[in-house]
Every structure is written in structure tokens, then in C-alpha cells.
Image 1 (cartoon, rainbow, N blue to C red):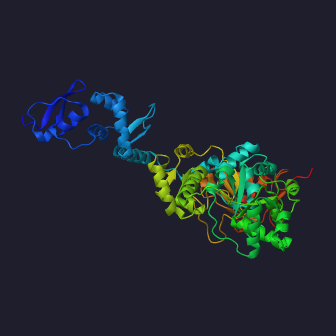
Image 2: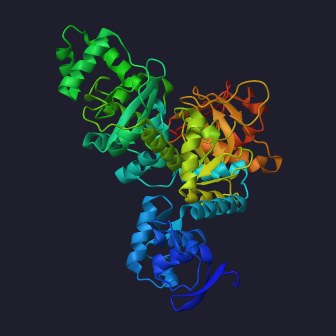
Image 3: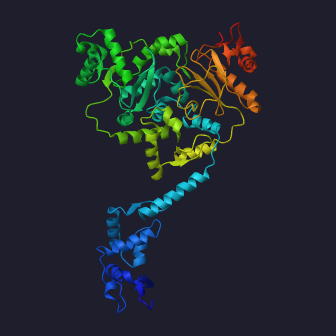
Length: 548
């Protein structure tokens, strides 16, 4: 102070010490009285906004604060402080928001301080979560997707569709396995009602042979944002004619399309229409046409249910129409607001998080997201930086790049412990709730048949672990019972779950010819299957609905 490098002044009625070179800034900003005899260099300030400079300095040395904090510090009314903060916000040096729990009203914070605090918070959150074992992810996935909750009706169906939005699954699995797993006593009329009302839409995503294909459901309000871009368009003249008619007329029944196409034959036009469906260009306001297309496939598989699978009689009520029934329309409606690729990609990644709760590289790859994980990573990192999701090592063995919704992390933790009594669920292998072949690798097997996420295949998950896989032909069963300590209860749960597939409201028969490539009698599962109600036959084990 003797060298006048530090000045003793009064600010807000208190004794304060300031740097001599700041004398002019404090005088101009706060009207501080300065000692006599200061060199002219200390009295001259080039600062065009001295008050904003002082408040920015305050912000850089504090965490979140309310307007009253710097106002009290500098002995000012709040109005000039608010004005200065707004000028700083326009310059990008401070931001306004709510940063502390329990704090009401707006707070302010320096952008650099905010980055530092977020970085420290994220590091702490990453450290605090011990990774769970992979079977815990299996238990979490079943619960997160709402499998076997007992909910029913259109409200439950809407909830299921909201989580499934944009997930392309085989049409043959959608109403026989995937929706019934989430909606008790699933009724196809509920889906038709939602489609007919305009609340829900569906879109094709590639053919799977002549009588099946991949389909995704969407809430209509999200369709434009979540639907994938159409990559390949059929380009025969008949496809062009259909596009022109639908663009000119809007939603149309097939006879109207046939008349307007002028010169097309019904079978040829119907095939061309389905080409456009599987390309993602055309949709329908009901699901009748899809059921009609699938009807021969379903009859050949003899699969029926009104609970886990749709009852054959129920299906026949809805498949009496031809496979071109209903009103057809283009998925790309004229007048849709333009959506940038970044907006669409961000919405799709957000939907993946809503669907799975926890995202890994493998999940993104299995969903077929455009650009793969490399493109998704930048979006996920930005969401983490904004505090919307967490990044951490949540599941052991799945790599460091894991992202999760905050609520999902808590539910994943709660799935650490296995239940006392084994709990089995049977899912379509293609169901997004099945983590195997997607987030989790299929368990290792000796040489021979390998499980796949194919249409018509089933998986049996016992307490989060894959216990069995049954191929589309429903005759060859693969088992995955690795832990000898739990082998007997796991086999019993597997056999009981398979037996429960047969019933008055489900399939009428289930035949297992082989287990793990060998005769059923030579498998450790044979006894459990007999106890569950399967009967030995010369060719294998059979369970059928009891005749009344």
C-alpha cells in the first residue's frame, strides 16, 4: 500500500482493498471515492463498460448466483446489475438458468465456471456407479420395456408404441409376439382404431421374402421427425404412376389407384404398391393389408394366440380382405416442415435412449442408426454436456462408451440382485427388449447351430440370462445353462415357460425334436420338459392343448 499498488477504499459501506490499476474502473462503475495523489495512469480507464467488467470478474470467481449477490457486494440496486448481466449474456460470457436444487428464480453463472462444474460433476457421477453384470442388464431390459406388466387396452398399446417408435421389426412378429408381450389380451382392433384415428402411423423398412417385411410404428406427431430417410426408391414406370396418383389424389383405396393408374393390372399394381411399402414410401390407415399379406405365412406356422400370440380365428376375422385393402398414402406428405439431418439424427438418438434406457455401441449398431455409432457419439456427447444424460461404465464388459438416462441408471442399479424364485419370459428374438444379439453377445456355444435375431425365432430369458432359443420352425431348441449351481431351477423355468406357450388362447401345439443338436431324451432338459407337461413321441417331445 505504501507503493500505492493496493488501495484502501469503501464499497457498500465496507472497507475493501482493490488493485491500483482498477481505480478508474471502480470509480466509473460504482462511484468509489479514491485517495488523492494517484498517478494519472491509474485514473484513466479504457473500459467501455466498467460495471459489466466488475460483474464478470465476480462471476468468474463464484458459482451460481442470483442478481442480489453482486448487487449487495457492490452496493447497487438490482436493476443496473440485471442490465449488465444481460449485456454479458449477449456476449456469451454468462448464462441464465436454474443450477442449484431447491433454488427458485433465475440464477447466473460464468460459462467457464459452468463447464468446470459440469466436468467435475460428470466425473463424480461416472465414478459413483459400479458396473453391473450383464445378466442385470437382461433383467433391466425386460422391466424397462414393460414386458408382462398386465396392462391392457388402447392406453397400454399407446404406451408400448411410444417406446417402440422407429424400431423396425418383422411384421410377422409384431402382432404375434412383440405387442402382446407388452399389452395383455392384445386386440388387433385397438391398433386399427389408433391407425384409423390418425394417432399412429406405420412404415415399411425392407422386405423379408415375398410375404413378410420389417415395419415400424410411430406416434403420428413424431413421424416426420423420427422416420428414417428413404434411401432406395423403386424406379419402374408403374411405381412412378402410383406416386403420381397418390401425390395428386392423396389417401386412396386400391380401386381408385387402379382406375387412376390407367393401364395397370391389379396383380401387377398390387405388387408395385408393396414395393413402395417396403421402400418406406407408402403407408396405410389400417393394418388389415399387412395381416392379409402375412396370413399364408401364419397359417403355415400354425401359430396362434390372443395373449402372447394372436388367435387364428381372430386373425381370420381381420384377414378376409385382400392385401391391398384400406387407404394408401405417401409417407412424405406435401407441405411437411423441412427437417434438417441434424434435427432428425438428434431425435432418433433421443428415441433410442427412451427405448433402451442404456445405449452402447452394440445397441446403436443393432438398430441400424444412420452413420452408426460414430455419428451417434457426437450427439450423445452433446446431450451429456448439457446434463440430459449420463456417461459411464454402467454394464461390465460393454466398453467405456455407455450412455444412459438418469432414471435408467437408478433402475439398472436396482436390477443387480437376482430374484429368489426364477422368472422366465418368452420373447421374439427380434424384440427390442431382447438384449442378446444386440447389447449383449450371444453366449458362446460349441460348433453347430448358432442363435440369431430372425423372424419367428423365440428366446427364453430366465432372470436376465439367456436360457433358450427356439428357431422359426419351432423344433430345434438351443439351451444356455452355464452356471451349474443354478442349472436345475433354470432348466425347470425354461421348460415351464415353453409349456406355457401352449394353451386355449395361445398356440395349440409345440413340438421339440432336438435339444442342442441331439435327441431330447439325451439332454438334461428332458426330465424338466416331461415334468412341465411335454409327452415323449418317436420323433421328439410334444405338448398340445388338452381336448375337452
